[in-house]
Length: 113
Length: 112
Image (cartoon, rainbow over all chains, first blue to last red; front, side, top):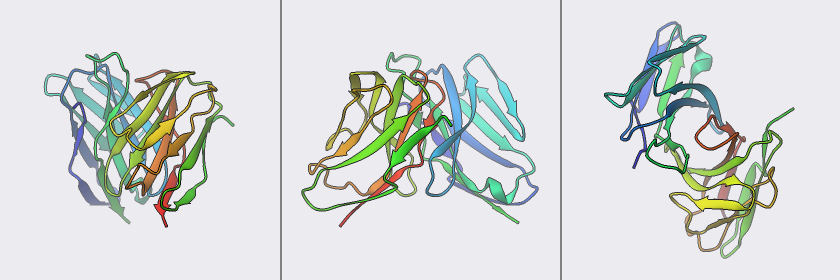
């Protein structure tokens, strides 16, 4: 399946440090998205990067995409305790007409004050 | 305020009972989705709808049913055939499939 895999499964850092999460996927894509989920809540969209883009920024977030390696990374700079959440990548499948997204299992980020 | 609303927040099901989870959106989105999330797991797609009066099975549709009679509504019924229904259910919508998803706040379903 196209399901992405995030790495690491869990990440624990101190406030002020940078957090890097990675996502790998299997087939060609049109776009890749990152979402955040606080415990017991719905997911919130963070950023979408298209297959012809290599890097995108949004505030303290930086996303890179390497389509040759079928991988993406999410960097959160100067992390805060409020960044504690699960982070998911989601991809579509360029070879499919269905247009659905495939989610990974997520990275649980804990930021200690 | 535009958004997507799920209700109820918590739901309990008895053996042999069907239950229906509500999902309403006022974003004028064509596409709507139902996902299931088990503890520590990612999201698995149950059903999705690209347009009114049309829907497709996702990866784990067995034991579930949906309808899409109105653009703004996409209710999910968990039938008695679903033997392990305890999970967190998330509804989402997007302007069309493959684009940014807007999620509801979820329904936690438990079995009595």
